[in-house]
Length: 164
Image (cartoon, rainbow, N blue to C red; front, side):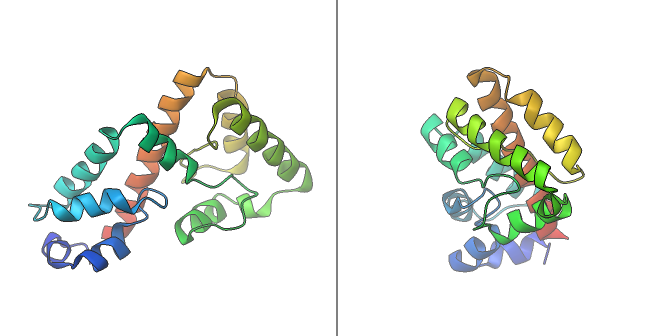
């Protein structure tokens, strides 16, 4: 499926079906990308998606951040999030780990106003928990920028899955 010619030929509905969750539950980025077709190559398409995200307003960034599920405790996960968390073994937490994730998720949201976001691909539970413990001590500006950086990493991983 990874050919740019195939992507350029997609209807809007098909394009949104494939790219609509690259940014968690945020179809409008894929919609804007569709409206800018055709693309010369896959890298140009990916760059445009990231550019649209980066140029978004702060309230749009907050909406995207808040579309992300809590780690290890969320029930209604998109297929992407479910697979990502499963691959990091977040679905196999001990009771102690589960309680710590639950506590950290709550404290983090109260402090920052959005859920903790980390690109979990290639990380294990211990690395994720350690990052969570460290990042919760950040100030709001630093953490907002880090969360946006993590969203871009997640989008990049998801885009790479699509073109495989």
